[in-house]
Amino acid sequence: MAILNPDHLFDQAEKLGAQSLPGQPRQVDLRRAISSAYYGIFHFLMALLADEFVGVRQRASSWYALVYRSVDHRTLKEICSDVAKQTPPQKYAPYVPVAGFGPDIQVFAASSLDLQEKRHRADYNPQPRFHTSDVELAILTARSAIRHFKKASPERQKAFLTLLLCPPR
Image 1 (cartoon, helix red, strand yellow):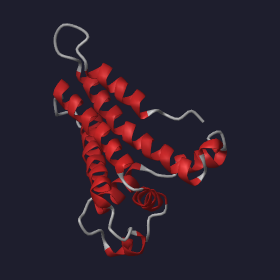
Image 2 (image 1 turned 180 degrees about the vertical axis):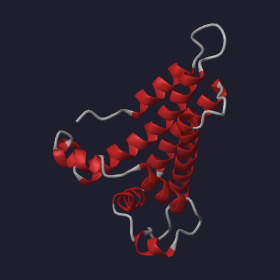
Image 3 (image 1 turned 90 degrees about the vertical axis):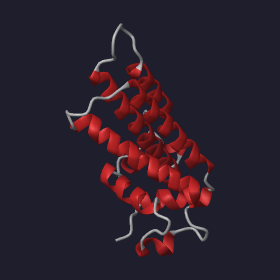
Image 4 (image 1 turned 90 degrees about the horizontal axis):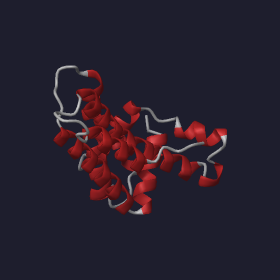
């Protein structure tokens, strides 16, 4: 299975957001760039999830693809909304690490929410006009979110990934 490299999506976003011709970049390029920034963190998470639960050596298997494709954007939004709170809802209590998710996972969750909202505006709302600075901020936010996730303890990362794959009812 070919894994989408988040850095490649961020590079694509940078190219789309750059002024290649005289004048302003086209709105379609700016919108796709913002979308690519969000998809960079989304695919980062999906690869981590499948690597964790199926294994890196199984990337060519149907099991890996099943786990990779098991999380939708709504589920990610719901988990991130709850994890970004100082005190997650009670339904998460048995699954939250003893010291909580910590600031790095919370920053990741808040950044994911922000980027998902920006992607929705860019992909579905014809009214806003976007600027190169919007693209630069989206890419910066996405890269920073991934750094924060990687800084979190393995226990916190696994708790987040497990809730993403198996949200409590």
